Image 1 (tube, one colour):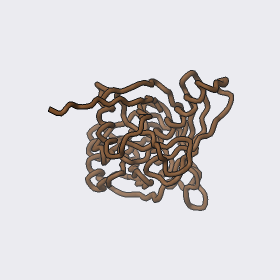
Image 2: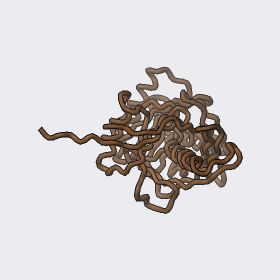
Image 3: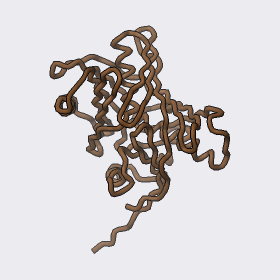
Image 4: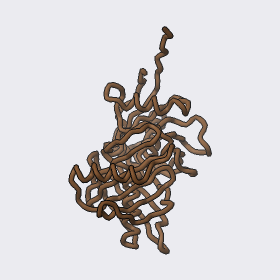
Length: 278
């Protein structure tokens, strides 16, 4: 019998409004990431809602590059990477918490440009992180099961914003109907977002890991809701989206009939750092 080799992976675990994220710091071949992500996400392992892998050779100059577990784009993972950069720097160049905002350029799978983030330390391992999000490629209103739904297509992920109040059964039916009607391509993800004007309940499906997670919060989903509401009202929108894991703010600037700027912000906490054995 062939002896299996145990892998040791250095990781950081973050908490961006409950959307627990594992950042794997060691280089992992692309073909192994989906399997490694499923193992790391398991309750018996590190346990998290999603996994990002440090990119040893990012496609462009940046402060840090990350590859998502299914090749998709993720706003909370980008914010987590920016928080980690400042956390790591503070160990060697400590400053007084809350005194300044530091900028980082983060690259991520699913998009073709860096995400500009600003980070301010607000506690020993807590950071306020704002990210300039990629703009939607398209936003349109669709109808499904007699519900008003806004479809916002971004590079790397498409979000479906369902406006109103829904029961648990109605949510399950809509998630299933949307994913059946709009199949997700490889290296892509889909978010089904339930938004009642105050509370956001996001469900995210990643094709290449075949995972559907009712996330505690969703950064790109928050941005998508802000963009959809800007299209709906034809004006700039600011939202404070209350989610299971906490609050994420989103802002869409409307100008000349389109969203000209999109950003999200909120706290990110570094919760753990160590070695995972797989």
